[in-house]
Image (tube, rainbow, N blue to C red; front, side, top):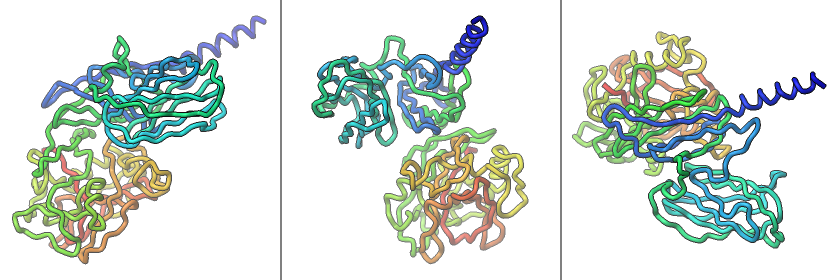
Length: 429
């Protein structure tokens, strides 16, 4: 009996260790110390939440004892438990389609409802469900909320979800707890991306929390000639754009970019929507603005420049010390995986084709497979390869580039025709 008690106490202790909760707060530095909003994405589970910069993020364990509160900061069910119906209220950080599903304990989806919602607080009514415990899931393009709903006396007529209204209140105002904690499920070891935003400033921090802490966003301006503002990410001693450059006037792929005083770009398959996703594609001379000086500003924002081959080397060796920068072709084992955005096109949760080998995006670089355009105007390899120029020439016809692909986790150092068109990432001076 004594041995049994000892075993139970040991199991309880382990469960409580596994169920450790973390509190994450936020601070700003650099060009501004203000953090207006923060979006948090769990790259392992796909969960995402948006909160005010003054809020505290409560990462609660999904294993061990205990259960999360029903009011998950950005989602509210009232009353809960319910009898005849319950009011579902959630805050959408953006307009677009929201999908609401009710799932029973056996994992069956008993009701699914889709509604175009506006930014702000959205209300729905849940009714017609039988007695039992259910999971309520709300999923938008860049957010996902989950809560438990207990029905104590429902007759189970016909499960229904009905739209009520939208109110454009400040995000999270009336759904906050008194302690301003926003809850998010978390499993030890999950990779999180924190994106802090204030006005024109946006900084990404990648982290795997192992304790309560403060995430500090180092803000710096990154604004191109068209007044587009870019998120940035600090990787080692360098600061990179966290999205592909998308500046210039779109021209057709069979028309060469020229030194005409106008910034020009291609959009994959001559479709402007692809520039919104992948950024523009640029010939090397247009990128460099018709100079050949390594490290030139080129088409990059003020205070930023086109990275040299040596700076790309610093970047890849920080991510993977096994990278040999003197080798053309594949080098290292996982630098490519650490910069690729996660998910796959086939699974419907990413922009790389299967298998998107080794993709963790643990650097926060969020690299996309934007493909390229050759000198004849033909587009190829979107979803398969990403290419980024350096400012270092090999000779008068070729320049160095870097490229991850969908089937390997390593990175390619290659030289390519300057007349081909690739994506651009700029490096802070």
